[in-house]
Amino acid sequence: MESLQRTKLVVFSAKQYDRFYFDIAASKPHGTLCDIEYLDFALSSETASLARGYDAVCIFVNDTLGKDTLTILHANGVRAILLRCAGFNHVDLVAAGELGLFVAHVPAYSPEAVAEFVIALVQTLNRKTHRAFNRVREANFNIEGLIGKKLNGKTVGIVGVGRIGLATARIFSGFGCKMLAYDVYENPDFARYGQFVGLERLLAESDIVSLHCPLTDSTRHLINPEMLSIMKPGALLVNTSRGGLIDSTAVLGSLKSHHLGGLALDVYEAERGLFYKDHSGTIIDDDVLMRLLTFPNVLICSHQGFFTEDALTEIANVTFANLRDFVERRPCPRSLVAGRQTDSSVKVEPVRL
Ligand code: NAD
Image (cartoon, rainbow, N blue to C red):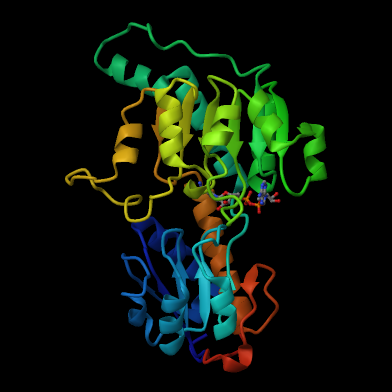
């Protein structure tokens, strides 16, 4: 392996856990095709020139790659963009295509991890275990105010029945819930759990609504004042997909008017710059988020649905597989933009797997 010309990869927004799992993946035979540099800050138009000299950049959910950033990366010799996440709404794929960049993502690192996290959020809010935990630690064994509802027999609506939506339906179905779903494409695998209905009917009949569709121009603020008014009074809304699916100000109003019964968020539309960082010693000027945090029936986590050992291992392995496909000029089944190989400055050498 010594004689191989090594591909240079720079990983942006790298946390300690990214380094840990990437280093394990890199220690495997296929990982030795690349030199890795880790940077703990985000990739943006301000930081893109730091990728000079690297063949590939690796980014996460809150690194935004608009046309300006992609142009700087390209001008600095970068030819491959590796997303260590499934969603790709934060990358201008059209611009990447025009520049001839290769873009690949990790489409399904662990649908079950996110689906299981949905259940964790729902049951925490529903059975109030987070409040019980705090009470008991202070020797307060009073259970008043901790009443929940059983899931069995309740109606759950899944919006977007892809990999995660289907895994979520499978688990709720195991609780004995009645399952409804809405999707622009009706996945036949859902038939064993429930039925597809229109979005309005799903919202009107569901006790729990869980969002699993991607963020696109047509799904931005899918949950808006009109849709919230259709929802069953007292229903619980869960979003582990992308923050922009929900109009947060409208949701705040619905909670204040006691129409919406609860809100569980793993994602938030203004999460960029906030999530994945400790702001405990600073003043946060997002009044919507701070007001949401005051409700006893709101639970917010900072985009951690995926955050399992299994998913981090899979993300690292698949990211290297994507890079390997690019370096070896093989068709990559997880590419979002194929890239122009003739334009590539990446040193191509046969790699022993
Ligand atoms: P997927 O592509 O497998 O499924 C998405 C589904 O949404 C598809 O069935 C698609 O037909 C449907 N859809 C598309 N447009 C729609 C619309 N307008 N209305 C209704 N349905 C529509 O995706 P996935 O892997 O299941 O991921 C779902 C979401 O979860 C993505 O947004 C992804 O970014 C997010 N995600 C979050 C985390 C986390 O840690 N919280 C982790 C991974 C993925």
